[in-house]
Length: 332
Image (cartoon, rainbow, N blue to C red):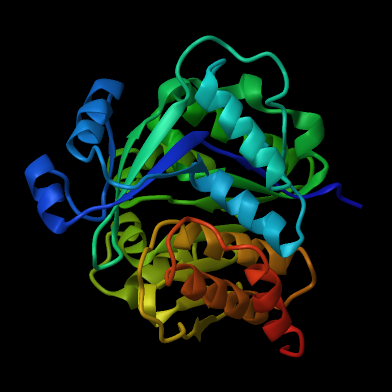
């Protein structure tokens, strides 16, 4: 019997979320909907430009958001990551523990700067991110615990890790250890930029195939070099035994190893799309580790993501996960 549903690896970032007008992105030279890796000085200049606007701070990073979402649904997760011996690192470690996610951050941390992600939300609910990885860029095989990984049903790999040499090596080694111990592998492409600029790293993780792949339509098209969604789906089915492909307001399409099935999204008025893909992954992983069919897990994931985008922040509020679960109780 596994001790953890999911052992996740990824960047540990403190998210700072701000609502800004489109004009701010234009003036700052930021491409809407993108994730840009920047240095700390550039981040500080951006913060000076939005001084006075309300800010919301939380522990973040793609895999951290997913593992917190998993915990909200009642799943058990462990997060392997790297933070510094600074105020932000202490905040991250405490916030993760408060949300029920196990980690090794109580151990000695190295001097440096904990990573930070500025999340700019425009009126159309799109999120644009500027990330300074800080010490999380040094995530390496030293942060991987084979014994704890072996206690999980799934290894969840955040695609952003392939942007650094040590992170890329750690993802490949973690995938190897997972397969060696009979742990299923799940990978999220994370962002189109990872597919565009770090394709070799993703290919190294995938190897002969992964058990579960998460991506959105843009990432799927970029990875497969397809002109149509149908072509992209065909390409993805050759590298993953199961796929959760999100389609924004249209919901998602899922591959179960034999066929694709569509799961419609819920009609909602979006406010903030930050974290929607991470929560989709959390709900699908929860369902897959708790006896749900892929179709039922997909409906849970689409419902949760649809609810999340109607409010600010990258995770559900207290009690909302239970509400979403209750609505799925009598669904096959």
